[in-house]
Length: 511
Ligand code: CA
Image 1 (tube, protein in one colour):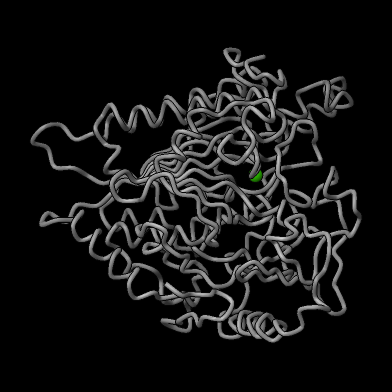
Image 2 (tube, rainbow, N blue to C red):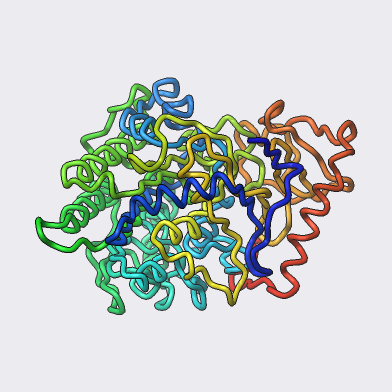
């Protein structure tokens, strides 16, 4: 098949939907295998998202990490061999924007969660339509477990955003513990007044449970010892859900969506006692990676044992690149810079997707995928493609045909990078054209993170060839002017989409 993403035209189905490549042979193949799966009963697959926190592109063995960086990941590597391993899978630069984009299929500039709400700050998913809600409307059982972090206000809480049930915490790991740990906050821990002051801040210090439409119930206050048990407890909760959802003989099957978000490996890491010193690196971050790998193994085994693996799409990813401002409690990425930035290190994340018998095994692919694409793709797989909203702009593209075709090609032409409310860059094929980014300091690819740098705009833009120069160290623009029009027209069309669909900014940029 001849198809060059730089040259080929993407098709825009409607003004409010990101254009996508429609590759006739691939679309026909996907439709055929999906029809065969659905059969006369209209069977629909279950969906599991396992979303890690701040885990890097390079942490797993199947991405060149694993034993090489002191934390073997045999379960994740084994899972990757059963499906597609995505090498150009993109999140947004930090937790909340990524999670809300995945859940709404929309860029942060559209859903308004441009950065994480902290310590009870308002803002969240109000007015948004979530993947969970749309799947629920289509008859799916929906379960969220673990980290939420898309707003703590009532309407943003998971049980009011499409999930039947939620067991986890509403915010982010460090907020529960850092002020309790004398290693990080001695000036608070050893001061009664300051401790009381933090305790009185209006954020919930507990992990919680909630059922659809109900109130949040506190389960337990998240102290440091409690935090070390969370990933284990949450895994048990998801295992219970998987077992409960397995159909009994003669029973009609209800398709389900499990959104399992781990606590690890966000700083500060306190692995479960069982995993202390379990990695060759003997470091809390690496021990946590070993623990997370074990959890993936447990979840996959439960799918196998209950006979649901062939009816389940499993997706494993991370919500942003490594947090390097907390090194060495930090992930590994071979790319430039880190979380908070629009350099590749900030946004390129692992992406493993399996569906035995439906998605070709043992295939690595560099097709561009945004986590937002899962919104449209999962709805299509769930036979609910007509539920993609038409009254608002959707930035995700349907990647069903890419996933279901052996050696398939990505349906996405452009990847847009946003540095909170500043347009930063566009990728197409191997090229990345950057008009703004964080600090130009060479050290940022080693240690300093994206949040630390200053935002800078370039007078003429910079062009990086991500195949020749994955660390984005040398602008190639002056030799490649032939491409410039393709990039600038891609950017212009993208920015013009904000005319009829204006940005929403309830949580403003930190800058
Ligand atoms: Ca994160």
